[in-house]
Image (cartoon, rainbow, N blue to C red; front, side, top):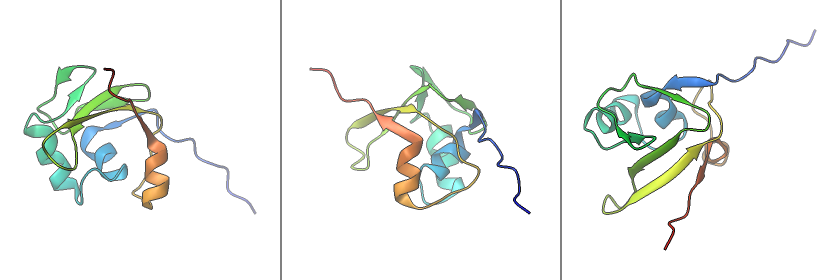
Length: 98
């Protein structure tokens, strides 16, 4: 018997979303990024890992090189951490306007 599909959540804790989207290796690392004030949700600095993110929110994060920032739009939320190609489907990068 086929189980009914569960819809993905429309809101999620910031630290969990960062973990599922593979912006950190562990939940504690993602929580540290949030509590350290390195993340902005819709231009508002966040200092709590439990801040809620919603589909359509704009996040500003440190880039992997830690010298620049990356701006992304949340497209989806996930129930759990998955492979990198699937995690990439959770967001879109907003290119810098020059």
